[in-house]
Amino acid sequence: MAHTDLDPEVVQLVEMLQSQDLNDRLVAAKSLQHLGDEDTIDALILCLNDESARVQEIAVTALWEMANPVVVPPLLDCLSSAHEPEVREEALSALKELVAPDDLLKLLDVIQVEDVNVQLNVLILLRKIHDAQALPYIMPFFESENPVLREASIVTLRYLNQVVRCEPALALAKDANEEVRRAAILTLGHLSDEAVVPMLCDAIANDPDWQVRRNSAQSLDLHATAEATAALTAAMADDHWQVRKFTARALQKVATDETIPALIKALSDEYSDVRRDSAIALGNLGNPEVLPALQQTLDDPDRDVQIFSQRAIKKIQDKLAETSNA
Amino acid sequence: MALATQRVDVPVIVDESKCLEKCKACIEVCPLDVLVKNPETGKAYMKYDECWFCLPCEKECPTNAITVQIPFLLR
Image 1 (cartoon, rainbow over the protein chains, first blue to last red):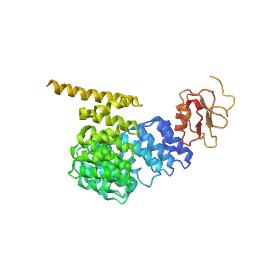
Image 2 (cartoon, one colour; image 1 turned 90 degrees about the horizontal axis):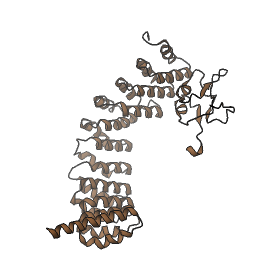
Image 3 (tube, each protein chain N blue to C red; image 1 turned 90 degrees about the vertical axis):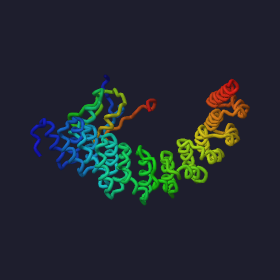
Image 4 (tube, rainbow over the protein chains, first blue to last red; image 1 turned 180 degrees about the vertical axis):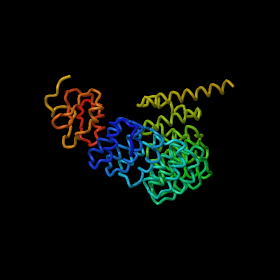
């Protein structure tokens, strides 16, 4: 390799990268990283296949810091299982910063490689580009045997802004693996297929994992549909406080008079977050029948609950005044 | 800055068995310039007992030869 245009010091370092001695290669890679000379990109790219994982890792960091788009394809190669986990991790961190929408086709080519680590990392990188063109390449992973890939693909689907319907994704809400279900249920909050809300209502009522039930409440909060009110009302009696808290939040948008008993009961919940969110929901409902119950929470031990109860009472009283003036 | 008289008491500890003679990464990144090479051994050491505990020396060392002992109250 000719390095005629380079500074003699840099030439010496580039030659050291080919040394048989590992220590020399380490010193050279680290020194080139500190110099940050873009003319050394080719030499550093060659280092990505060094026999030492530490040299590879330093080379990845050096290329990352140079932030030149030409390093994206060689860094994508570092995501494969042929590289040590620390090299893959560093390359993924670098690519998270370096990939741009123009790299979409490269990513879609690479995702077809039969290597779990490549596929997983590219699924993560596609979240940064969030282009709906990636959908046909993501969908096969919904049926992958590997739960990690199923989870990564359903999370990536959430980032594809333009996608509002995706029927094959719905099956993952019933996946055997609870981590996949947790991710799938959150993704359903962003989809508008007809089956989504009934599936979320079913999950909030029947899923054995409390995080899935909590995520269902969050997704139903996003949908904010009256169709879910009955399931949300029932979920106010859930065993886990986080499910009750997020259910109360969802009910702030869709509560009806039938929900009042469950919300009033939640005003004396063990957890202050649940009491606060229930008070807000009752305030939004605007029914004067709940005023006595809200007034009892004005001396709640949690200051936050007192403040939001006061606001809820004021909201109901303002509404009453408006109707009596009208 | 006070010279470090006892090399075992300073916050930046260099494992000489790992330190590379040709490498100057830690010396270059130290904002206080308190790390130097021992001309006899070629190994880095902390010459002045002054440290901001900013950690680039530890992070940049290609062989993980450096350990910075952060005082309990700064952790």
